[in-house]
Length: 560
Image (tube, rainbow, N blue to C red; front, side, top):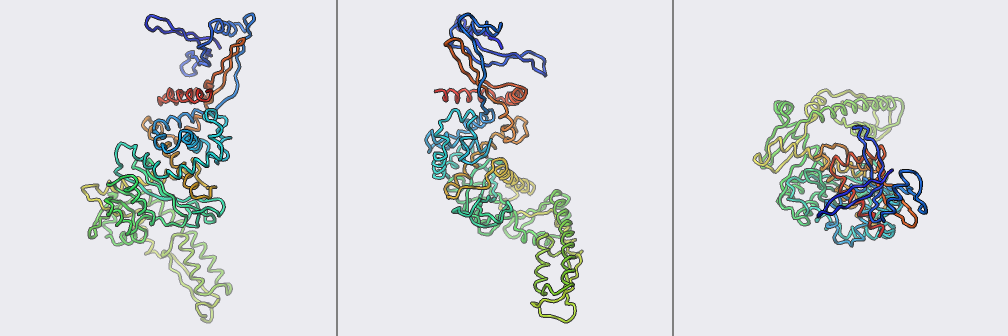
């Protein structure tokens, strides 16, 4: 370490700046670089000279011992990137109904959800050795205060979303909509109910979450319903919300087959929305089987075909990826079903275990569970005298693949049908298909919220706390998505959460200099091998100066 002096001129006056720095050689360029550890501005010149002499010779100036030591470390490079996004997206304006202190607590909960998801009880401990934990008062991270702020978030559940949506430059043209579920620990949640679980946790209470995003995947609106709410019944409420709460009067609403319901279509049209919806499975199968073989062949070759029935426009689409996936699932399902039917046949012929009715139910259940219903020819005959359908008897179960049914299934595998109110002048068939495929961005949002942000399981039981928890995850993903779009523009393809957590390996070290009665403490980035790599990544994005400015601002507020 050494004292580095630099100077500048302003209005013919010379200004000298002194800093403690350390030298290192850049492993890539071989050049000698300097890492500033502490600014010495404000210290008397004789003190700076004493520090310079002590660092050069290792000896102290007579009467003035010089001690340069390092102390605690704090994590926070990723945290500073989150704070940068918070300021850039004007999140304080979206949360303007909260006081400044309450916004700080909300920011801490959102930032922790992105970087180190934890319970509200553990938040103080999680942020204890971070820049944010040092800057905020202990009360801001107290669990009672956090719960109080969550109640305020619930009170402003819709106004916060409305202000975020209002910050967009223009109304979105395409709206992507999907639902998911998340489960509770325990059975005391106010809105927790048993229902269709996307997490395969049929043994847990759950809530249903609906998310609307823009065509870029930026979350626009979120809603929470009791766990038994069917997907189709959520559409009408979201349509009214988009019109009444967000002032969206004209857009294209895109939903998958789980959203298709006649009432939903009518609600969309009455509110001035166009739509692109996947057909419900039975209706889709009916439409595909009604097509001529030539039309199906064209769909395979071209990718899309379209037709109308009355005033309704349909677009049939073919996907090679879907075809391969459905074919492999069918073949695997046929194999598993055959094995189960073989075992069932041996059992039913060996003794009086099943009645004719019960055995038929068992067979139908196996075929349905494996997704191959209608692809087998199954026959059940009594062995010996003929019993009544409900009487247990020895039964002969014979089965074989239905080749004709399998060929019909093969012809429609990989194909799906969309229903839309848009005319060819609005969107071509190819553009309709492309817009519908954008739904994967909502699915991606749910994956982020469940995996990285760890929305599940929910430990809150009160309705207002559950909704506040969902809103915090919504705000966290909003920031993540905005950062992700900014990263993509600069050619970075890594997930934002992974990148931010990697950046948190760049830590800050507290350096202390004491010369007689003069003492100076300052926090600086610890630029070791990993730290220099992280700083290089941030520098390449052009984020370093703003992030470092937020760091200095936070630490200054902490010292005050």
